[in-house]
Amino acid sequence: MPDTSVERRYTPLIILLLVAALVATIALWAVERAGAERGARQQHATDDAGGGGEQKHYQWKMVTTWPKNFPGLGMAAENFAKQVELMSDGRLKVHVYGAGELVPAMEVFDAVSQGVVDAGHGAAYYWKGKVPSAVFFTSMPFGLNAQEMNGWLHYGGGLELWQEAYAPYNLVPMAGGSTGVQMAGWFNREINSIDDLKGLKMRIPGLAGEVFAAAGGTAVTIPGGELYTSIQTGVIDALEWVGPYNDKAFGFQEVAKYYYYPGWHEPGSILEFVVNKQSLEALPPDLQAIVRTASRAANQDMLDEYTARNNAALQSLVEEDGVQLRRLPDDVLLALWQGTQVAMKKLVDSDPMAAKVYESYRKFYKGVRNYHHISEQAYINARDEVFGDDEF
Ligand code: CA
Image (tube, rainbow, N blue to C red; front, side):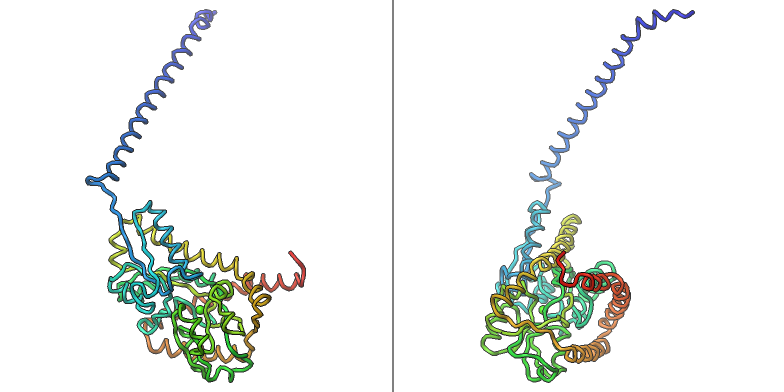
C-alpha cells in the first residue's frame, strides 16, 4: 500500500507555495502595467505640451445663408460647430457667421470655393445658376421625401454625385439638415385654380421656381432674412419657407393669411455644408471624421426636431393666430406636376451632369417608391383606415 500519510502531510505546503507564486506573478504584472500606463500618460502629456508630437489646433470660419442664430435652419450650423468642438476636445473650432457678416447670403458658395473662408451652410439649390444639377441635392418637386433623400445620398450614390458636381469648385459637400416635407407656402389670396397663380409673385427657389413661372407666376429667390419684410411691403404676394415650427418663429402668420399644403415643391429638403477642399485636407484623419460625423448628426437632428414640433406649431397657427389652412386643389397639383416634367426635361437636356444625376435619382426613386407602396405608405394608409377617430 502506498504511504499516503506523506502526501497528506505535504499537500497543504504545496498549495501554499502555489498560491504564493500566483500572488507574486499577479503583483509583478500589476507593477509592470502601472509602469506602462505611467509611461503612456507621460507621452500623452508631452504630445499636448509641445515637442515633436504636438497636437495642432485649427480655427475655421463658416459663413451661412441665414442671419446669425436664425431659428430652425440656422441652428444646424450652430449645432455642427458645437459638436465639432466637443468631439475634438477643442482642437477644431468653427466660428459661425450670419449672412452679411463676412459675405452676403448668396455669396457663400463663392467664398468657400475661393478659400476666403473654410466652410459654409446653406442649400444647394441656391447655386443652380452655377451648378444646374445642384437642385437634385436639395429637393425636387414631387421627388423623394426626407427618409428617401437621406437613403439616396448616403446609400444610393447621391453624395458621390454631389461631390463630383462640386469638385470643379474646390468644394466638398455634406448633408446639413433635413427638413422633412415642407408646406406649399404662405399666400395673400386663395388658390382655387391654376389661373390664380397667374401674376402672383412668389419667393420659391430651385427647379420649383421654374415650374411656378411656367404656370404663370413670377418666381424670385430672396434670402430668408428678408422674407418677412418682402411680403409685408407687397414686394412679393406669396412665399414658401419650411413648415409650421420654423415658419411660426418667423411670424409669417402676421403678414399672410393663407397657409397651403402639401409641399409639392420640396417634399424632403436637405440643407448643405460645403467645405473648402484644402481646409478639409489640412485636417488630420480623426478631425476629418469628426467633421463628417457632426454634419451627419446635424442633418438628422433637424428632422427629429421638426418631426417633434411641427404639429403643436400648426395647431397654434390655426387656433391662436387664425391662419387659414388650405390644401392645394388637385388640378393645381396636376398642372404643377406637368410643369415639373417639362422643367426637368429642359434641365437634363441642357446639362450633362444634371443628366447623370437625374439617372441615379430616377432609378432610386423607382425602387424606393415601389417598396414604400407596401411599407411606409401601406402602413400609414392602414393606420388611418383602422383608427378612424380613435385615440392610440
Ligand atoms: Ca423651402
